[in-house]
Amino acid sequence: MPCCGKLPSWFCLALLLLFASLGAQAADISARNPQLSVGEDGYVLAADFSINLNARLEDTVARGVALYFVVDFELTRPRWYWLDEEVVSRSQSFQLSYHALTRQYRLSSGALHQSFATLDEAMRILSRLRDWQVLDKGSLTATQTYFAAVRMRLDVTQMPKTFQVNALANRDWNLSSEWARWNVTPGDLAPSAGMTNPVLAGVSEGK
Image (cartoon, rainbow, N blue to C red; front, side, top):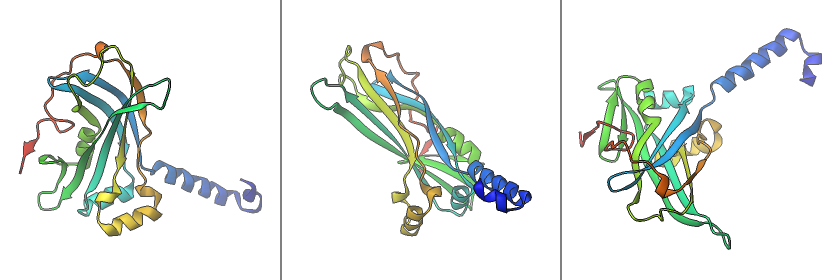
């Protein structure tokens, strides 16, 4: 750091500690262990995500503002003579919210939801995507090799307008994993473990 030659050493050390602290508080998502398997009605997706929220996002949820996480999945077929062909592109949205009356966090997907006593418990379930059906039976050729990709991102477009404006000017809200990519040959896929709902195993409906 060139400027440190003109500043006291204790001041430079304080700056370094500050930058290190800011880096430790940064929010991020990473995708791991993605795989397709064969379910009862088609092909299902499983993946693990490492999700770290910073203090700003945790405080937003605690104040009663919902966060929306979206899992995107893409499958393409390679073509030597042209661009790869898109076979399917799907997205699944999950809402993370806090209810002050019950003092519980809630993770929802459509009409399904599950409540948790702590934010850590909710995030642990959100980080484990299981048996999300992304393709119907018969939609893939058994011997063909496909390119699959999955990611998770924070979708600020589903939040109140005031937060959308703030997100455009603040990097704390720019939260998305890199695409996790892998090759898929349907004829080599194993059968699914057989869970019934993506991510929210054992949820209740409509309450």
